[in-house]
Image (cartoon, rainbow, N blue to C red):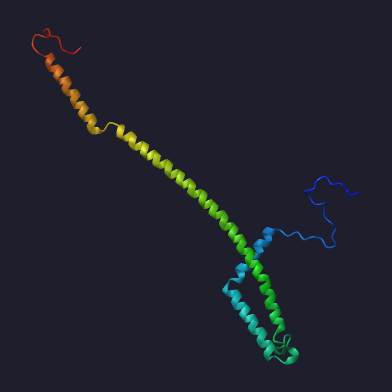
Length: 178
């Protein structure tokens, strides 16, 4: 009869392997691929590759046949193989570096979007505060308004004082003030 399993959504287990599985840190590998892609994109790399190919071709074209390691007669097969291998490794590493850059750009875009939202919220808050201050300033008494009110009060007080100084209203020696 078949062996019963408790969980059907999980694999049975790992098989024993003859070759141990490599554990590669993706972050370190990504940094190395970015460094490689960055180095390949420089003028120094292009000049170095040009010099390398020129020396290779010159040596294998001009040197005596017994000293040539990739003769012209075989159409520089070894050089072609080396350049093909370099290109086959370069393309995936460059793509990996581009993917990592895309991930960084995506994170930066999200941070910029959040910063823009915070700036918008702060701007709206400050605009509301400015409106509230303007409304409060409109309700405050201005200097001219206070001056006019004080003048009116002084006129009223002077009018009351003049009425109080009419003859016969106060006894002799008494003052209208109390």
